[in-house]
Length: 63
Image 1 (cartoon, rainbow, N blue to C red):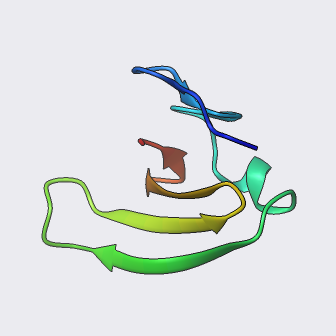
Image 2 (image 1 turned 180 degrees about the vertical axis):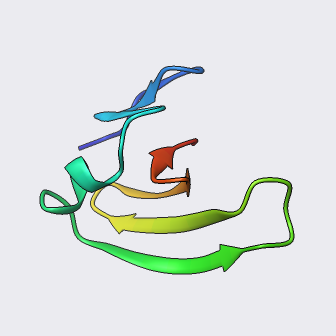
C-alpha cells in the first residue's frame, strides 16, 4: 500500500484525530519514543507496511 496524504485529514487509511488503537491490530508497528519535552507529549508509532511514522497524542493520531 502506498499511503496518500490528504493534508489535515488523513495519511492513507490513518485518519487524523482518530484513536490509534483501532489500527494496531491491522498493522505491524513499533513504539519508537515518548517525548515529554514538547508542548503536547506524543508517542511515535513506526509502521513497517506502509512504511511511515505517526505521532499520537492522548491516544489520537496527530500526524
